Image (cartoon, rainbow, N blue to C red; front, side, top):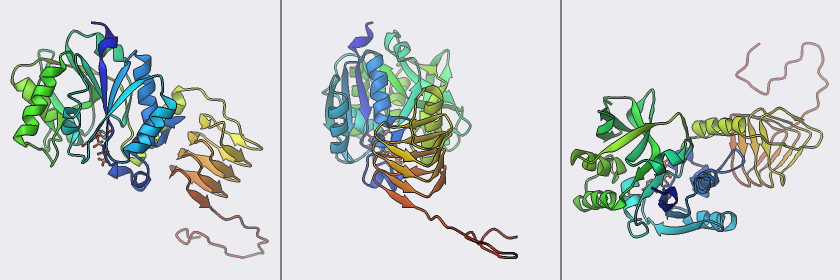
Length: 334
Ligand code: UTP
């Protein structure tokens, strides 16, 4: 099968509640990780794999996503389907049924993967990416038999394996998938209050449909502040950048947008500074500073600074005499 025949479905309609306050005014997929927004990494990967047709499911702050894609990915053929309410991943994918004929590749909008997409697109079988995780309870979990998936459950309280479903799915005949989703939607079945993609696939498996688990190592979640920072560290380690800053010390790996202004600062390791950001007299490591943020006199680590946010610390000059006590942090004794 030629891999270019695939249509990629990318659901990005969720409200990203775990990344509030950043997602109050920005959709999750437009938050920066490494050198660009999350969705930019996903679209780059699809484009590199030769996917020409992409159908995105938008909802929450969808216009901002459309604007970004139109500006930066004009070469891709992207169409949109609206999900007015985030009723679940299964519902989001069901809504794309009229955009897709033939094989479909589903990629979640908040997951960056180091995976060979062609493995999924040239396989003669339907595939689903899995990864062993320590605590599978917040994932869809699969059981396997004879090299195929024999059962799958969404967010089980007592998982029977630690093989989690991690965000890439390929189906050679999309009508089988959409048929299962249709039946799920019609039945009104929900798990944890949502129409789950896992439940639709579980139905297919129960009816004897063969889905092959494909183990992948490089799975980078962007759903929570700590995982976003972890993914940022991974991207900075992987890509090589040549950051520039005035009168500053840069400790690699670091990304500084060519349109950002960094002066009199120590930046890195693992700092990403977005377009138009302005940083002066600060120390910034293990942090993501989004576009047009303004930071002066700060010492930041493990931080996320949102687009156009202003963070100003203080700079003091002291002439401290014998036996003086100056405590800006009252929790430190001594
Ligand atoms: P998540 O559940 O991780 O994303 O869905 P979320 O709902 O935006 O985040 P939280 O849980 O509130 O923090 C995985 C992907 O599926 C999309 C999301 O946008 C995300 O890219 N999704 C999820 C939809 O498009 N529609 C839905 O109804 C649910």
